[in-house]
Image (cartoon, rainbow over all chains, first blue to last red; front, side, top):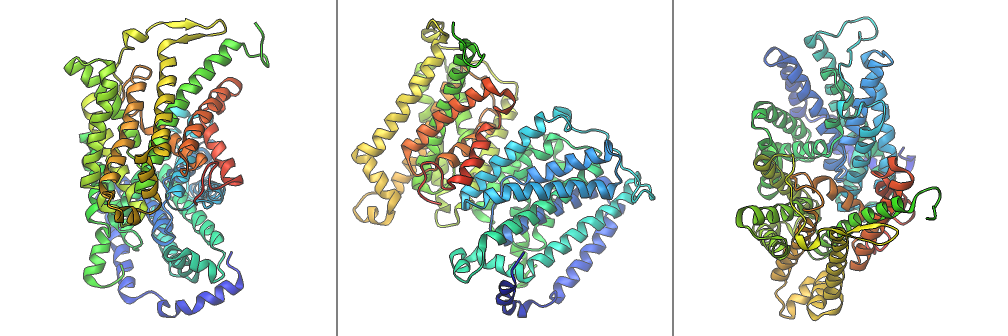
Length: 326
Length: 295
C-alpha cells in the first residue's frame, strides 16, 4: 500500500519505538496468563463473548484512537461477517476456520466499498455517513433471503476444526477463540506501532501538514478503515461460531454504539483500553440483564459521564498516573 | 382514468402523498439539525429522541391534563425546547472547546437515556393519539382522496420551514445568528450575548424536532423508538443536502421524501435504502453535498 518514498520518510520517526517497551511485554504476557485461566473461573461462553468484543473494540480503536476517524457504523462489518460465517458453516458446511475466513473477507470487502465513499467526508459528516451506510446494511440483512430476516440464522453448527478436531466442547473452542483474538490484538498492536501507524498518527494530529509532507492521506485512511473493518469482521464471524447464531442485533446501530462505548470507557488510543472497556461493558450487560431497558439508560449515562468528566477512559487515567503508555 | 407506466394514478398519488409527508418530517428535522450545527458545531444525535419527546408530551398533555392537539402544538415544543435548553446549559456547553466528535457522543448518550426511560415507563407497543376533530375526514380531489390531517401536516411543515428560513435570512435577529455562525468572537465584541444566543438556538432547534413529533403523533403511534431509525435517515438527508444552507435543508428534505415515495411505487424493495443509495451517489459526484460549502 505505502509507496517506497513514504516508507523512507516515516522511518526516522520509528527509531524511538523499535520493539515493544518492557512494561508492555510484561502486560501482554500477564494478559495471556489471565485469558488462559479465564475459562476455568467463568463460563467459557461468557469468556468467549468478552474475547470477541475485546477484538471488536480493538479494531474500532484502530480507526478512532489511531486514525482519528469516528465510525458510527461498525456493526455493519461485525454483523455481515457474522451472517456470512454462519451461512458458510450451516449451508456450505465449512469448517470453523474457513467459515470465519469467509466472514472476515466479506467484512474487508464491505469496508473497502463503504470506506472509499466515507473518507470523502471528514469529522462528524464521516460519522453520519458511516452510520447511514450501516443502516443500509441493516435493511439489507432484514430483507435478504439468506439472513433469515427477524429470525436470523439459528443453530449454526460448529464443525470440526480443519475437519479433524471436534469443537463442540465450549472449553476446547475457547482456546481456538483465544488464539484468534489474541493474535488479532497483537496484529493490531503491530500495525499501530509500525511506520504506517506513525503516519496515521500524524494524519490524526494534523491532516493538512501530512498532506504537505507528501503523504497520500486518503490512501492511509482507506487502508486503516479496511483493516479496522476486517478485524471487526473477524470478531463478528467468531462470535457467530461461539453463539451458534447470527442475528439482527449484530448489525443494528445499537451495536455500533456499544463498541464506541467500550472504547470510550476503556480509553481511546490506548492498547489495553478497548479490552478493559469491552470486559466491563459485557460483564455489565451480563449481570444487569434483569434490569431490561434500564441497561440502555445506564449505557447512556456512562456515555454522558465519560464525555463530560472521563474522556481519557480507565486505561488513559491509569496510564497518566503510572506515566507509561498502556 | 389514465395510467402512467401501468401504475394506476391513485396508487401513484397515494405514495406521492406519503412521500410528501415523510419529506415534511425530513425537512423539519434536518432544518433543526442544520440550525443547531450552524451555531453550535455539533450534530445533535438526540434530535430523534427529542422528536419522540414532542409526540409523548402532546400525548401526556391530552391524557394527564386534558389539553388537546392545538395547544399542544405550541406547548410541546416549548416544553421540550426548555428541556433542551437545560441540557445545553448543563452539559453540551462544556464541550464547545473540544473536538466536535464529543458533542456527537454526548448527545448519543442523551438519546440512549431518553429512549431508555420512555421505554421503561411506556413500553414499545405504542400509544394511540386521535386526529383532532377539526381535521378528521378528507377531501375527494377527483384523482385521489386526501385525508385532511395529512394535508395539514404538509401545510404546517411548509409554513414552519419557510418561517424559519424567513427569520434566519431576512430579519435582524437572523442576521445576528448568521454573523455569529461566521465569527462568534466578533459578534460578541459588538455587545451581543453570544452564549445566550447559542442556548436559545439549541432550544429552538430542539423545539422544531418536538413540533415535528406533535405533527407525527396522530399519524404514527406514539412510540419510544419512533425517532431512533428516523434520525439516521435524516442524517443521510443532511449529508446529501449539506448543512450550509437553510433552504438547501428544506428542499432536500421534501425532495428526498418524494423520491422515496416514487421508489415505493416503482421498486418497493428499494424504498428503505433509496436515500442511502442517493447519499452514496452524491458522495461520489459532489462529496460536499448538494447545497454544501464546507467539507
